[in-house]
Length: 165
Image (cartoon, rainbow, N blue to C red; front, side, top):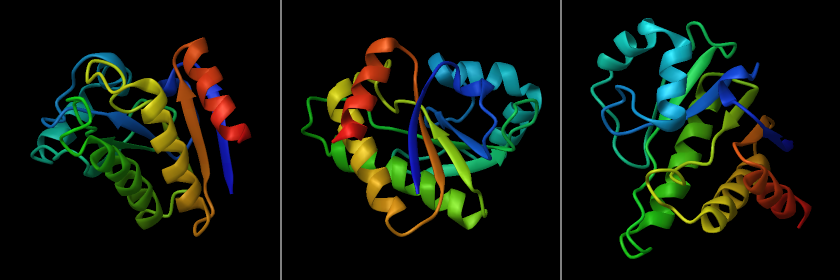
């Protein structure tokens, strides 16, 4: 069981899979989604077109193409609506379904960005708590290396503090 924090660009990590905080179309977008599509190359977009989208809280897997990771697990986190529209459960499902896909594909390492905390507006502290709790619960039953990738120093400090508790 391994849960660590890394600060930087998720697309540079050499893990079995990186998680893409995607939109429901899976056809690219801003933030980490756009960066993953740019670095993976046009083959990723072509494969994503065959998946016919992804619902919020669900996850789908593609090859990594030009990325150092073998696979990309695309998941759609919830848009924040004040916490009244089941956002916490949907965010938890995004993590659980991504982790389950990793197990189904016999992956040993996976890296997550801070799902839904960018343009989707999920409060960073609440999202980080859900991520850490969900991953810790998963790791009680599964052996896997999980990396939480922080984009900013603030995110890194937040994850680090949660992991020390």
